[in-house]
Image 1 (spheres, rainbow, N blue to C red):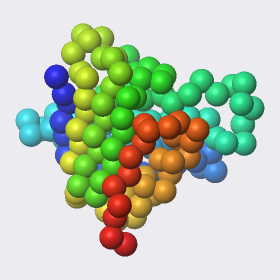
Image 2: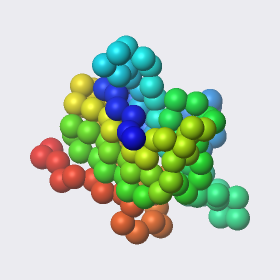
Image 3: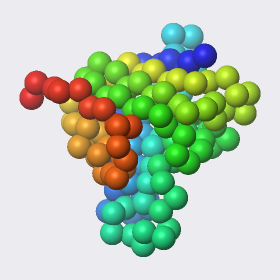
Image 4: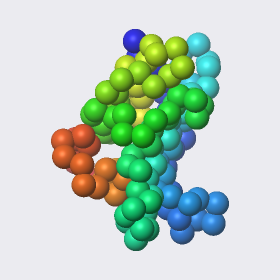
Length: 135
């Protein structure tokens, strides 16, 4: 089963923001029925103590639907984000994939995500796939 929604807001944030304590990518929007959804992907910053690095944390809709190191594949294109999970992380254990239409995100928000994701996925092989984009 998969969760699908269309993003209307998102971005990449760093600890330079006084309210943020890690590297954070967030996207939010509504599904066709009008229900609000969001995802967050986060990891400690590169200059933090490596012994404190638990890896990549991914969640959707609520912290109960989150886990560390659960992303099998994270694909980013100008039209979509496609997250395939290693295992369901929601409390009902149903969601294996999250598909987000990001075509309506502002270019600035999309570009911040595109530039920031490699920082979160640093040191991982084959998980992050960013489509070649015409810039």
